[in-house]
Image (cartoon, rainbow, N blue to C red):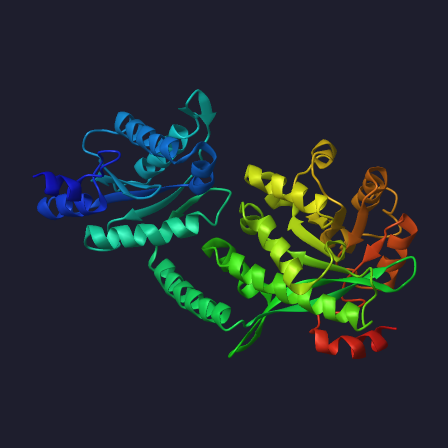
Length: 428
């Protein structure tokens, strides 16, 4: 009996285990229809690292207790694994009942959980399956897992209903992930470089290294693989390859007098990378191996991603800046940073998002967001780069506003390093 209990019940929460939920549905044929809710805790790994694994386990127990208190006895509750919980509601097939359960689950997590006197707020994602999609619990759980993976990609609602179309998309995703892992192993992810121009002198003063995937199928842009790389965690390996190769290329180009000694290499990094406690050590090793001085490297992180990031993100930003590495806030203006919040960020450069550059005209010059941001950077004594410059008018307006540097297709598309000498001649 003890061995069977270990299989049927989760040892931590005493809810059903995955196997237990499957067995009870198999043993009760009347449970042939209803709705299955698969609940995942967003960023639970970060929470676990913050409060400690013992307290993380206690949070999971508290979640189980809340679920048991809030839902009727005929609800089958299970901990499927890690931070995922399943609620199977027999006979629930009306849309209004399903929506009500959605709201109840979200309200359940609106109130904070207490751990050693400290409150912890958790957000959830929901994958929902109506049992007309499939014939048994293993299939329902698989479909709910597919829906949950898509729900986690929707920061606005965090909810996704399973449909057969999702299964096809999930199959494509699995195949793409396999190809991406092969690409990582074969070092198919390479940097292309887009020049950054100093507006005062007109000279190239730096470049942004942008990831490209040079697979057997041809060259792929970041839009084809970065989102899924972020979600799957592969971005860490891809990002490290790009950082290493870009630093190596930059050191060689400076040594060969191809680039000036004060050339600034800009490399995009994800919050997944920056929030990792070992990331500063990783960057330090890359600089040691490639011999690139810290003063020649600027790391870019998207503004909107910083807001919800783990505490280690800001700590690592500060450590990197103190090492002499530049920290650029990318796509500035698309998030919701206030001026007060900017003062608390350890950055050395703001990059104005291209959407504001596209709207820049002589008529709105004085009142534009661009002018305001440039004034802010002047007060903070930081550098400012305008992205997405596409014509000479934009470049001239930005220069008149006091913008320091620009990049965009008006000057150059991102190019591989071996095309750089020829392209520079054409630019001039």
